[in-house]
Structure formats: structure tokens, C-alpha cells
Image (tube, rainbow, N blue to C red; front, side, top):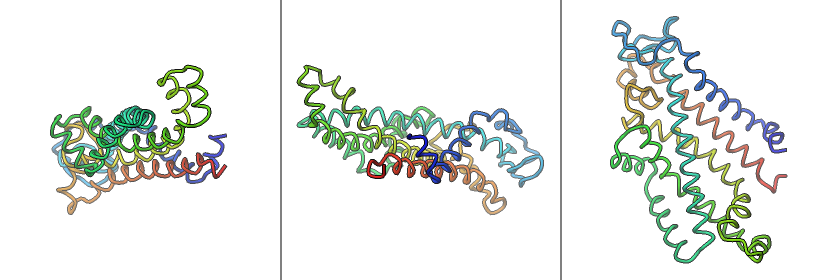
Length: 273
């Protein structure tokens, strides 16, 4: 029923297609790439698109098409793992805050408020400044940045569910707190979590691209959409196409996740069933 309603939603179908194409391109990068994305060719520096180099080359003569294709792997890998990390951390902290309440709730939620008081990209930069810029630290930084969003959603759901009759019945049967949280409460929080996770994937792609553009993402020469744009910024006037193709890749990925998130919000809304 869920898949049928999602596929009947035109916006959701477009989002699924766009995301599916992005994932397919990332998985099939070795087959789709026409050149080695790391090979330097000083005789073909910053050339415009041609039959040999479909998207042109960068300042080192590296094929931009191949770098964009391989860049999808790094960008999607970072955003997926960072959102998984944020989901796990947010579910754990939000469930504890909502279920136990009192001092536990105050301490956890004041920490979440403190994290949310910083702009996401500035907080990520601060974390990377402390940990050092590399692939896994980017995942940690983005994961920490998005934990409060999940924690607030889970906490509000738990607060409304923990006094329900089925929870009281489970408690009266002698079941422990951990069992009640994982068996009865969290399964009823999945709908808002799925919507938030999908929206966070779009934000994570933008944040990863921004960090890569600033030189804090995947370390060179590994290609990511952000550092491809960063390499091209000095040639925007001479060869603007160097920035167009990685920019289009970022736009399509973000658009796909946003469209899917909007569709999931409609499909999972019980008032629309």
C-alpha cells in the first residue's frame, strides 16, 4: 500500500527516478567514466567540452565528466552515512529525553538547543577545525549537526505516546523501559523520522558540497562535487562550463531528495489516507 501510494504520487515518482539515477551512476562509475578522474594531462588544461572530453577539463587537464561521475560516489556516501549517524544519535537522545523526562530531558534538550543555536555550516566547520578535515570527520561533523533535528522529532512523538493505553498495559505486564521504548514507542515514530531523514539527505549534500568548496571536504585529489566547483571558480569567466556540470549534479541530487521528502510527507500523513 505504501509503495503504491508513493508511486501514484507524481512528485514522489520523479524524486524516486532522480535519486535512482544518481545511485545508479555512483555504482556504475567505473563503467560510465571515460577517463581516469585523477589522471593529469597538462596538454589539455581547462579545455571546453568536446568529443574527447564531454564536460571539458579542469586546470590540471583532468576530465570533468569522469570527476563528476566519481564525485557522486563520495558525495552520496558522505550524506548517507552522516544522516544514518544523525538518525541513530537523534533517536537515542530524543527517546531518552521524552520517555524519562525531568532532569534527563532538561540536560539533553538544552544540549540540543545549544547545537541548534549555531548555523549548521559554521558548526560543521568548527567541528572539522577541531578534528581535522578528512572524509570520516566530515561524516562525523554533519552527523552531529543534524542530531538535534531528529532528537526533537522523536522527543515530541515519545511525549505523546508514552501515556497511551498500550504503553501503560505493557508497563503493567512488567516490561522494562528499554523494551517498551523499542517495542511499542519507536515503531510509531517511523513516519516523521523517514520524512526528516529524506529532507536531511538533501541538506547534507548541500553542506558536504559547501565544505568541499571551502577545502574542508574530501581531501584532494579525490573528486567530490564541492571540490570540483572549488577548482573551477578561477576559470568561471574563461570557461564557465567547468562550474555548470558539477552544479547541475548537486541541484539534481538535492531536487530528487526534496521531491521524495514532499511526497513521503503526503503519503505518510494519516489525515490524507
